[in-house]
Image (cartoon, rainbow, N blue to C red; front, top):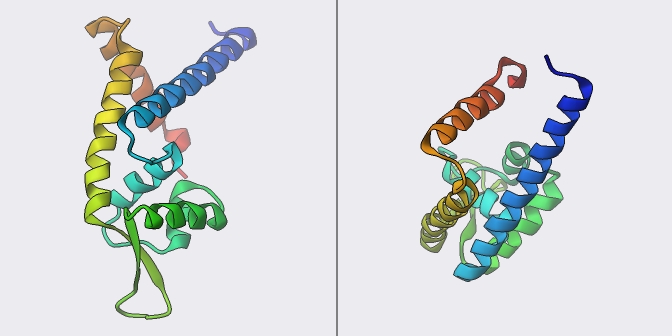
Length: 148
């Protein structure tokens, strides 16, 4: 049976783990010299999962951030040649964001960075513990209470 104290401890452990994951990924990003921040990495991954190039407002909604934050991220990524702004073919007033060839290449490298960070974090766990953790995380991430 859980108690408010044990739930509080679990919440604190999850927050500490999240911070550790973030620090390790950031360190791996720096070692690769990709010139991409974790927030920019997230935007690139989001773009990769879009069927068509999204509008800035669509990206803001998917990332659950304010539109101004997306503008700053896109500006930096565009300066680095990883994304480009393109006019919507059906409405020239609408601007969409798409990955460039360099952006696709960077995504592949980011995948390697995330894998290396995960390996570092999960190193202390046995295969059985990793499987159990994966099942628990699936339950938390895919639970019906997350459906909006």
